Length: 113
Image 1 (cartoon, rainbow, N blue to C red):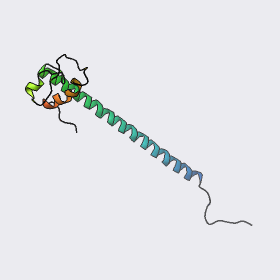
Image 2 (cartoon, helix red, strand yellow):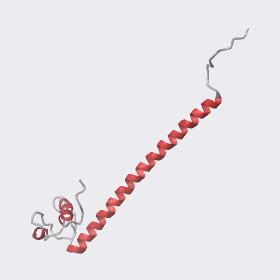
Image 3 (cartoon, rainbow, N blue to C red):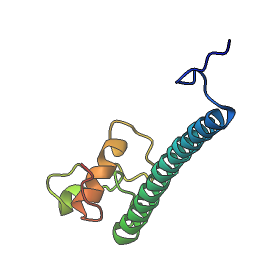
Image 4 (cartoon, rainbow, N blue to C red):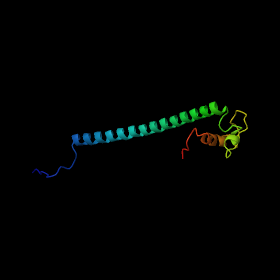
């Protein structure tokens, strides 16, 4: 005696193939979008570094000193600290903390906050 079921109990091979293809397609999209986000962040960082390099070059051409090392900064901008004028940015306590402020005071860059 044969019994015929009204509802099938398993998926067909075609249904499983379509489902697996859809999952694989979604995984490719997620992986590709993650790579695009990483690439976008990298391009943004490169752009910011290029802009900062240009700003430092502009400051150097204008004031004949490196930002943060400018020993006449207080004469031009009374609120800024002078650098030591040794043409090096190796003193973490002085020049490295002043370079950004010198670029801001010279209006070469805007505050990124």
